[in-house]
Amino acid sequence: MRTSRRSPIGSLRTTSRAMVEPNSQVVPCPNCAQGEEADLLTAFNNLSRKYTELAEVLANYMSQARLERGVRAINAESMSERLLRIVGGLRTQPGEYPECCLIGERFSDGGHEWFCTGVLVHPRVVLTAGHCQDPAAPINVVALNAVNQGSLRDAEVRRVRRAVVNPGYPRRVGNDITVLILRNSADVAPTPIATTADIAAAQKTMLVGFGNNDVKSSKGFGIQRKVEVDIMHVRRTAGDDLDEAEATLKFESDFEFVAGGGGHDSCNGDSGGPAYILVDGVRKVAGLTSRATEGVTNPCGEGGIYTRVDTQRDFINRVMREANINDTV
Image 1 (cartoon, helix red, strand yellow):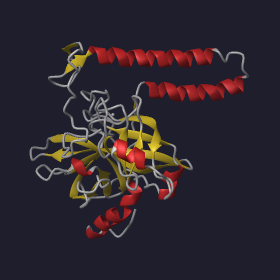
Image 2 (image 1 turned 135 degrees about the horizontal axis):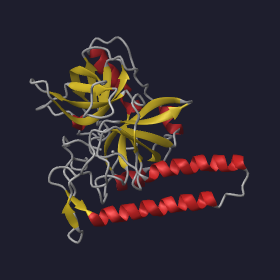
Image 3 (image 1 turned 45 degrees about the vertical axis):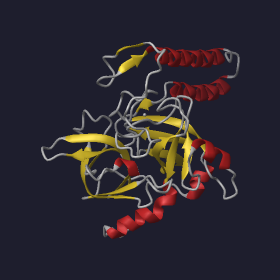
Image 4 (image 1 turned 90 degrees about the vertical axis):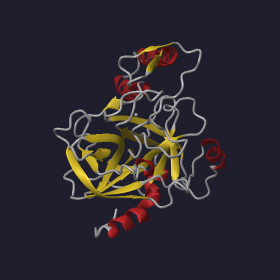
């Protein structure tokens, strides 16, 4: 599934492909992006890891044949969750995450270029990443209720009236957010923003976006996918000591959290996409996809950094007031 082609900071996940190691076997790849090559060694290692994990799950299930049926059912649910995570993510179903939208530019000839992901948090407000907004080619359109950029017949395409990047970005870490004000209210229902207390209690997050879906970040953009991952580092109380993690991974825990890894992650094109949490059965937006953690080997798959939306409420509400929207999020 993380950042777009528009990435002014080096640690952000641009769409440029990571260099293939000299000893890797590479061949032309007809299903890769134009000009890409297939890294067979990486593909083999990834496939081997997935088959090993699948075998472990199957062996574990078979070993429980003599357990009481109710216990087996509970255990099977847990195993099913693991199986979904082995493949790194699944395509979403139409209508499953209609508020998670494509972010792009509409040209005078009616054509579009899609390059980031966003999320609707108010009928007229979409959030995306700060680095997705390029003054030379500003965001001016979003596509809600979409699952595939190649088929937008049933999508709700809305024009953007105003795009405002947090003035602290990129000087201050943790402000990678752009607020988009739509010209008209969306028909799709928005998703509420999680509170600080909600995030403090969360252990997992569901990442959703339209980004690439391989660790080399070479292909897959435009299809909406989801993957549930563990929240690895987040400030839950004021007294939490996250200094070592912050120094190693290069994030600011007052404004960001770290999630994912082990092949389960967001990727190029997911920038600005939602990191959801469930609160009493209600889906809420906890974060926005920002960038990869420091020191990764591959562009995607080893964990990412997410802007905490709860810390951006004042900024979002200020932009709404300036747009004469008499409401708050």
